[in-house]
Amino acid sequence: MEYGNTTLSDSFDTLETRDPAEREALLFARLPDILKQAAKASAYAERFKGIDLDGIRSREALATLPVLRKSELPALQKSALPFGGFVTEAPGLFGRLFTSPGPIFEPEAAISDPWRSARGLFAAGFRRGDVVLNTFSYHLTPGGFIMDSGARALGCAVIPAGPGNTEQQFELIEAYRPVAYCGTPDFLKILLDNAASSGRDVSSIKRALVSGAAFPKSLQEEFSAKGVEAYQAYATADLGFIAYETSAREGLVVNEDIIVEIVRPGTGDPVPEGDVGEIVVTTLDPHRPFIRLALGDLTAAMPSVSPCGRTNMRIKGWMGRADQATKVKGMFVRPEQVAEIGRRHPELGRLRLVVTREGETDGMTLMAETAEPSDELSATVGATLQSIAKLKGLVTFATPGSLPNDGKVIADERKYD
Image (cartoon, rainbow, N blue to C red; front, top):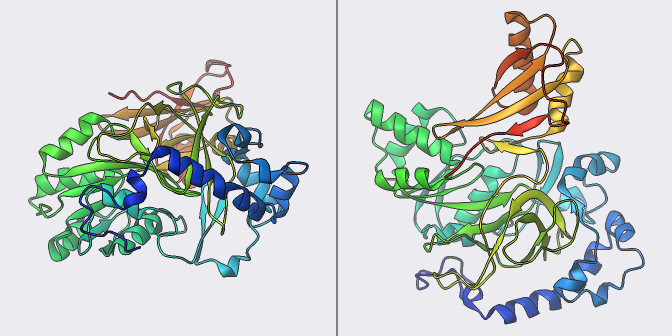
């Protein structure tokens, strides 16, 4: 198959528009072989012990397999470096090797479009011959390469810009005239606002694929008013593209070659269609299969098929977290990180990280109990927060015993349209 066939104006290929029953039958016909491939790895072999994998040929049967929680991966991998016994292939047989906050170690298969991102980029209007400004990070984490590999599979030229340094970004934009942008919606807003205030020309950018942060309708409309049609994708560093927005702008269409379940948080039990639950993903990837990976994100399935003509399952997009971990400016912040701040600063009592959104930008404030607040302590704790979370945040102090004793260390107080 040729990626990005320009004769397909509305869909990437015929897989996207096939009969849903046909797709479902083919996915579950392939699943037993994927499960047996996964079971060659010691961790999956232990999890599947006593299970007839040849009999896992339906959603009902799949729901009987144990859930693997993404929040468990750091500890599991630490016990059996680097991949926790869930991967059979040696690290040297992969194309690239990454780490994400946790830490979680992620291998990239040595194939074209290993993160299945080309399909979502195509839906956002990316086409062969486009120049793409990619502002996701290329440093250690897979974010930059997830977009880069898909864009190059489509036949696009990619500027590996990475995040930050707006002045240099403007130089690249004015020299190469990219028509498309990849990155967080927050950074796209920064680029467009700073260009307007400083007289820089970024008018070549006409479309965008954004991910890694909230993308409310108000921000989408703001970009559109500035001449940029932006679409969102739901992706993770472990799985790549899970679902993507299309021209219909009615939810996100689930990617091909994966199985998405919506389950009751804390269980592996599927919820009725339309109910909000936790996203669980199974990938039909023989190089590194994930079987029922629970991501900790909440969403709900949407009825019927998309008006754009794509027939796969649709989800409403990100609707919050099933656990306390959350994304701030595209980076996960986890309760374990807040606990590490406490360990490094024993003079602090109870801690609570409050995540907010001011205008169209994420922000966070670490509230810390202490009997001896000072500007010096605030600066020191702020530096620790940035070192651990890789994000800047404010630090405020509270008197001992004044923060809620409710077990919550991360409070996401963001409100969206």
